[in-house]
Image (cartoon, rainbow, N blue to C red; front, top):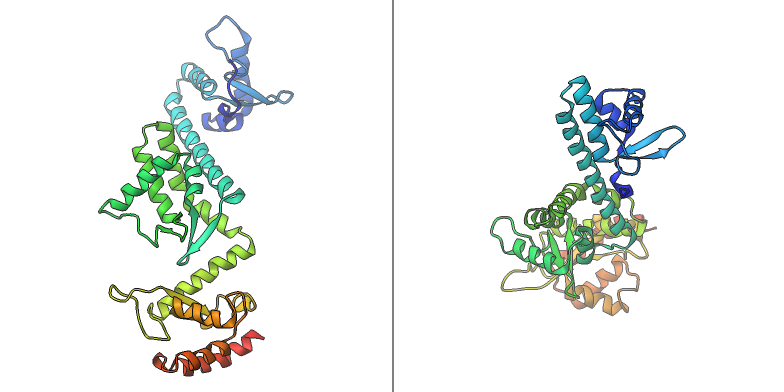
Length: 333
C-alpha cells in the first residue's frame, strides 16, 4: 500500500548532507538498490521514496527508505552510520513536530481566533486553545482545574487566565504554556504528549509573531491596555477622585479614564499623561452625564465634572489636571 504523502518527509539533499556524501553518490546508491531485483537491497517507489521531480530524479524519502540507505552504507563502508542516522531522524522528526505545532497555532489565531487584552496581557479564548491542543472540553477543564488547585505555582487569575462577563475563559501566554506542559505529562497517547510538548515550546514565539502582524486596530487595543496598566501602577491602584484603594473591606473595580477620548483622539490613547485611574462607578457616572461612552470627551469635561459632582475630590486633583490640560491641549490639536 502506498505511503501517505506526509510520511515522505526527508529531502534527498538533507539525507546526503547527513550521510556526508554528495547527491551524486546518493543517486548511485539508489541505482544499486534498483539494479538487481533479486538481491537483498530494494527501494520501493511509493513506499520508501517518491519523486518530486522524476525527470531530474529529485526525491523525498520515508523513514523506512532512508533507514535502508543507512543500512547499506553501514554494511559497505563500516562508518557506524546507523546510530548517527537515528540521531538525525530524531532531530528531523522534532523539527517537523515543532513546525506542525506552529502551524496549528498560526492557523487557529490568524483565521478564526480572537485575541483580547486583559490587564495588558493578550489572551486567547478557551475554545481556540482547545482546538490548538486538539483536545475536548472535558480534558481541558480537568487540566485547568488541576492547575488552579495545585499549591506549587497554580494558574493565577488575572495573570494566566481571566473569566469575562459571559463567564467564558481566556488564557494568556503563560497560562497556555502551563496547560500544554501539564497535558504533555498526563495524556496517555505518546504522539499527543509530544505535540502538546511542542506547543508549549513553540507558543511564546509564535504568539509574539502573530501579535506583531495584527491589524492596526488590534495592535492599538493592546497598546491601550498596556498604557492603562502603567497608569494603575503609577496611581498605586488608587482612585484619584476619592483617594480610595480597593481592599477586603471596600471592594470596587478600578477603571482608567481617557481625559481626551480614545475614539476622537487616537494619537493620545496610549499617552500616560492622558490617563487617570478612577472608580468604575465614577467612570460610568461621568460618561453617563455626557450621553454615553460613545460620546467624545476632553479633559475640560472631566475637570468640570469634578467641580460639580465631586467638589471635595482627593488631593487637589482638579488643580493637577489643570496643569496637565496645558500640555494635553497642545498635543490634542
